[in-house]
Amino acid sequence: MRQFIPILFLIITLGLLAAAVYYLSRRFALFFPAPGMKGWVWIFSLGLIFAFIGSIGFSELTNRFVAAWSLVGSILLGVFIFLLLSLAVTDLLHLAFSLSPTLRGYLSVGFTVLLTGYGVWNAYQFRVKEVTIPVRGLTEEIRAVQLTDIHLGNSRGKKELERIVRITKELQPEIILHTGDLFDSKTHFNGNDDVLDPFRTIDVPHYFVFGNHDEQVGLKQVLRRVNESGATLLMNSVAHYNDLQIAGLNNMAADSHSFDIHASNDSTTVQSVMKSLEIDPERPLLVLHHRPDGISYMAEAGADLLLTGHTHAGQMFPFTLMAKWMFGYNKGLYQYEDMKIYVSQGLGTFFSPIRFGTHSEITLLRLVPA
Image (tube, rainbow, N blue to C red; front, side, top):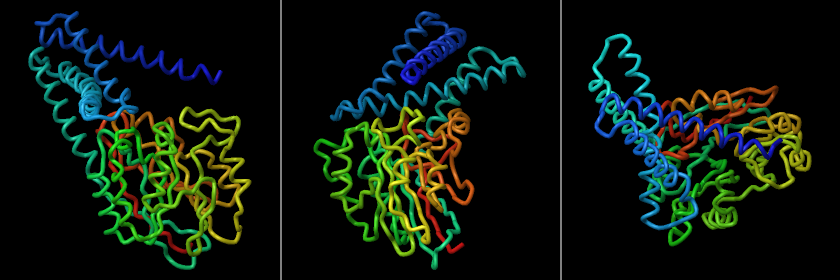
């Protein structure tokens, strides 16, 4: 049954895209009749193909032409989503005020331009989220920064990472905890060996676990670059900082019975790894895992806090609503039995460099004695 899930997802996605193209074409044929219904169907269909190729199809290629197509295509995907939302709004306005087709068309386009402009701007505003978390067994406060889901690729590079590191250093952390998805394409793998140089300026312990996108673009490359940047790789292993035990887990499924399209294909699971780690039950245990999965197994092992990302909190409306349903832990601070969970919204974006209804987050964690 598991092998059919991606096929089912593809069929549903194609059906929704076909319905969206039909809806857009019908409305635009009403608002701007010149191309006709068939003309608008061709325009929107070709536009979507262009956008998908640019946004998703170029993660393996690296050159300026590809980078430009990818950036334009990924923004265009956001435009399609906002255009659908704008049309829905103008349809409702028409029911209330009987607007002319031309006015509805201009309003829809105007709303789309404004939403897209704000969404792109918002995605590159790195905001600091400060959270205080009591932790059992701590004898003194630890000031930590969590970084996650930076997604270096065609829409983010060294310039953005320099800003992230500058803001991080201004927060004066004692330790940096990095929960994966540093890369999302190979754009920076050929001729951009300096993209992680900003990490070299960090002079406090910096621990890193990898995410699903790091695996997809080439895990060996990612791990080599992270290691050379001065960060410490935690791969199903435990490090120690003051009172803390820090368990860093690879990106993997919760157990052998769970299926997740974003999990690694190897046989290790959160359940098996947590049982194998040498953990001192008398000391506080902090777990780093890219995705908020395997919570119960971490709690069984005595974890006091899980730091995770992956969800992007849905990134942009209406996916923000879907994320609340898809992920049991979507964003912010949660409690599971005696363990706390913090899910960061992350710093980067996936499929489109747009955030609407979410923020790009650097998390300042004040871990205090419980």
